[in-house]
Image (cartoon, rainbow, N blue to C red; front, side, top):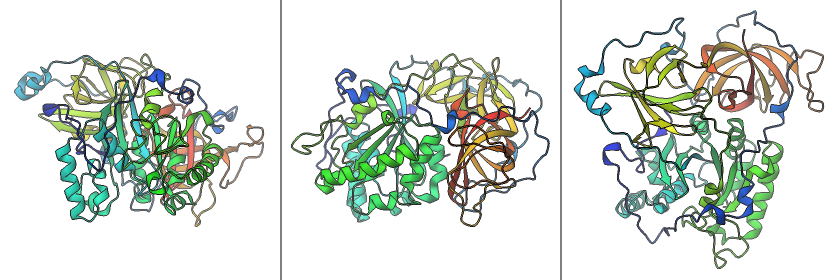
Length: 556
């Protein structure tokens, strides 16, 4: 859910072939990115090994949090907005108390399944894999930028581009044809907005990439959060057009909310591209005006470290500064690297292949009697024949087959988007938000109450106080759950970063508070200090993000 796997760039296993690169008058194909060693020193500052986490993440929690949570809060209600998630399915609500037995039937009874399982595996690609999410306000040009990258790297052929050009002209949307590569359903093309998170692949001589094209409209923020939870790097797309940047940056604009959410889910670094600069004749004063406002906001309110931010001018429509740096004739004042050069220079050094396995489930479907489960490996290594347990329902099975980018492989490490083929389970047994672990190692926590540290970023005008009894919706990794504030344990002093002596009755916007939360149904999560991707979360209510948090203690 949330992935548009029907994108033109998505290549089925049975038809995997590299399309030929082509040219067209509207788009200028680029030459593949140069080697990493030629990239400027500014790129080297993006090494993720130096972890600059948020200030609030380093705040010391209560020295003695309660050992057990005594009261059980009443069942919370979900958000009232139509755009927020629906009620979770019945099968998610109560985890099994004992492990489910391994399936007794064998795959030999299914000839089609045997044919699938007898396919030959290939060795995993040694190039590093990165998940990139394109975020930003509606109409900033995210889908056009994504489509042009796919076209420039040879993932879309000339005939397909010509077809999209004709379709766009028929709808009087002549400049939208590149966006059709990612926006594949008729509603998205007619309205000109992305609804689901589009997904496609491309590669350079240095790395392999998965593009996640997030919707920019405020009604589809939950879809954006689901995509951002799978990303390693964020590209914040800003329109240089007069009025479009201002609309996204003003209070309530999606530029602000997307940047805050990207930091919350752990995206670092953030590349800020000022798009549509060709329409402003590459005006330096407009570029510097936008960069000045955004830089102050990202550093102060989103708490991005300067070394984690990169700014650059681009044109997603013409392809300028995507694959190759801008020439002096086009933009005499910019001498930095191109977007692909920056991406090729990013190094992810905080991935652990030896840690316990954690794979949050993003989707599942059944094919020829076998269950296929999609997810991203957050930690550990997944391999063929591995015994796995799917939490929270404690379902035990094993990995029969493993796919990475629709290629059958023997193993997959952290950062890879994988498809696992398993048997003995039904589609209704597994849901989005479940977590796959290795059976013989540490399993993920399944809790109905936990203690967290929260930063209150915004509250609905109708209810400006955050206090016990407050009900909302929590987004944590790929899971969405209803939560209720059971108790406020302490408020954190921003100057000393230590808990205040007086216990708060309520807090307002800007406060940092340690709170006891109840969740229904139970959710899979881990402590932030052990598994950051499974320990950080966002709280939303009435169509807005009201708090960001981290798990500091699970209930005893």
